[in-house]
Length: 590
Picture 1 (cartoon, rainbow, N blue to C red):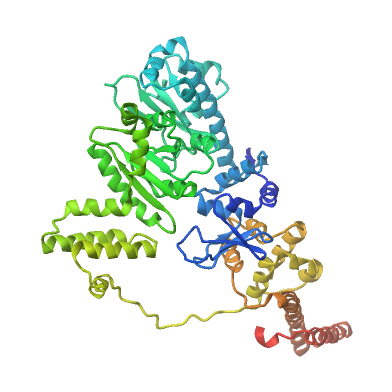
Picture 2: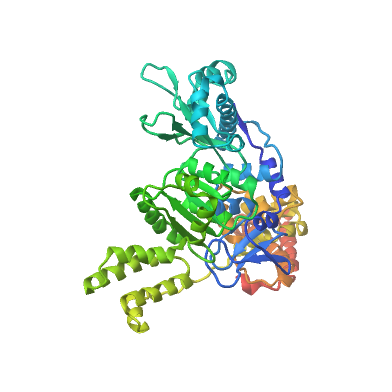
């Protein structure tokens, strides 16, 4: 049997989470009436159209139409999956995730991840303790040769895997874990003879933690300069994804709260040494290619990212690749800058030779993306020839068009015109013109009864108290099954709100439709919502009664009705007339 996260716990977690506080911790919200608003974090806009509603525990952008509850926000803003969202909310609310016996793939994944985190934490402790062991003298000498102090060793939990480590892991401290578990962490493997071995043997160990301090994987640095590869990382696992991993993030957030900018460097030791020299906002990605996931995480922490790669050819190539990858992520007040070091210099060697002040000067003199973009392209093309200018223009345009900020693009296009001598705005605009596609058709909006009714209850769950479940269960109508299901969930959860209600249907086929209806404009004013809702219920009741009447009429035509059936016929007829007189929106619905 597997262990399952109870649905009741997820519901409780949502009720404990204040979506306003959650979003406020990530973007700046301003109170406006009953709502909170901000410029949308998911697209560029001049005036705020991103609204967060406390009562509904729901957010919605009127510009790009993104919307949802606290879980949806974490998925869209932080790039988390569902399991990671539940883990995040549990940590924020300081609660433990319970479980119950059942079979579920989602819950299997959750417990598998939890087991890996626990195991990685225990292994990291063994590695760290090893560094100060008498059998790891060479490792400690190497660390000291890099001029790393004990305080920094402890901050980054630096460790070492010596020849006795595998025995400690397998036969003593972690003997309760299966070999399969150790292999799945990525630290162990088996050779062709089936013998298990330590992948990080004789390597300095660098734990890679998330913002909460959970260890996702390890980096390993060889003590022997001639042993290749010099650096290795954990393999991809359920909790280790290279495209999302950022080294040094936990240490930064422990040291600083408000981060004006982040400095991205290439190596583990660049981060460690710069931190030791009190440059305390340095991180590293694993490899030099900054992915969209990296940009998403980094821009959620700060609005300015400064890249400082090594001064060799590989470092220069990485800088240009980073610029290209960053373009779709530049909007609103986001910026990227670059520091270029001298040939064969890296941040580690630079700060040791020239010190903190010299590196601070480099930060101040870092150049913006726009400056680097044109510097790079001007070197690539001969602007003394028409052909060179032509190629330069089209290469620049192909890059600039990827930027989402219209203002940023406008200034870059103007600067591009100056670079090639096209000062006439109309000439330059002709190059950028795009053909407009005309739509020769109009979309007709369909306003069905159930569509209006379901949208009203999703957007205003407290309406459930106006109707009787018993009476509602007798109504037969297309779409009634899902409506009745919603009403039942409302009765079971008196604290119901829109975000909470939608969560009950996540993963079901109807979810996307309900999510759409949660923001659908039903064109009913707030003052008339209750009245309209009750009238719609009455109308449904009439339709249901008419169906019963129709069946009796058909029976009358074929076989005739007995005395009881005739009384029933006239009773239904009276009910229809009585209910019909209460409805003032018949023409709107028919």
